[in-house]
Length: 232
Ligand code: ADE
Image (tube, rainbow, N blue to C red; front, side, top):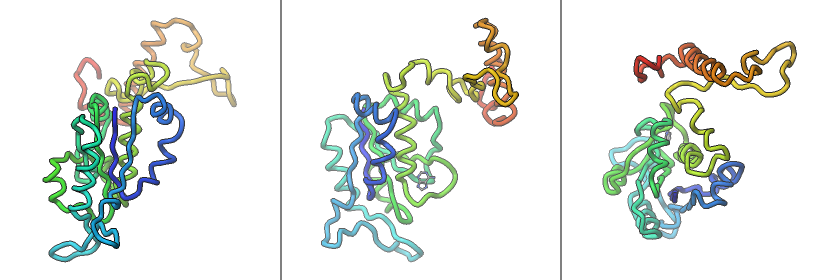
């Protein structure tokens, strides 16, 4: 998959996307992340990319021209048609379901804004979707874009070492993940549940299912609303 990111702060992405699983995903070419600086497309000598809102009000608004020009230049770098997504608090709420959906695309283009927002004609003109990572306002779309990249890239084929690890985790079946333990068997008087040491895989699987349901009921009962009755 190719992910293009249009941003005023490409440096913000460097370290977060250069470690561990995402680094390996990039090195193996499972994902190619291409950062483009919107400011490089500013038309004037001051490299201006934002301006005061028509009608008045606080803050600055991202201008059409640098974003449209950046979009057109980036789009032409590959023949694959990108799914164009603007990061904004007004967007569709990002969740594991949407991460899975995006992981099936060949190419994503994420547009991260700063200031008070984008000129509305950017969304209309680029026919862009909008994604929000939650009901709170951040200082820009860069962190949200990184959240989307991380959640999507780890779902791509070959990225997680053990192919099962994206199957058995929280939200994969609509429930929270069961509790995990590793050595030692006893730590500060706290024991690993006996059943996990039993070697009885059938019983362990049932115990894990029960625990998943139990903790979802306790911590995230809202998740149960979306499940069929035979899973509750
Ligand atoms: N930009 C600012 N806040 C945001 C949010 N919650 N989600 C996506 N983009 C944003």
